[in-house]
Image (tube, rainbow, N blue to C red; front, side, top):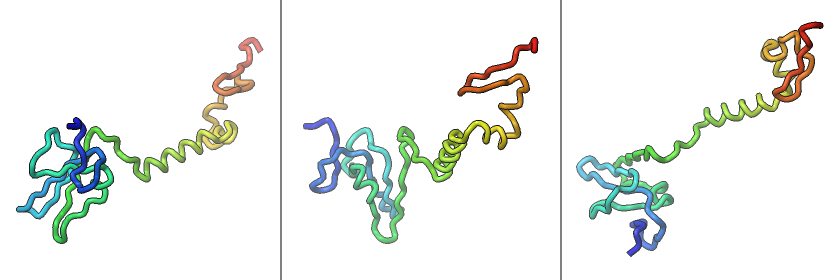
Length: 124
């Protein structure tokens, strides 16, 4: 017997990642993380079948999130990341102009190469 639990769907041999339980009194199907032990009245489902799960008409599907699984990025997260990449790609001169002269405001600075700065001697 294999130690990996398999999907309960007929002819599906993929490994199970979620457990489906029906609560008949509430007309609810509960899909959550894979249960620790195989229960006789629960169904283990693979990733594909758990995503495509539908319940009978009039029933509600409750999907419990697995706390250990990484959360998918939202649209706001992706937009913030794209804005940060655009800002990092801007040339330093344009970034200093847009920022109100933040980095280039030091009057002793003669030149800049990456994160290094060349400063005038205090004697001059």
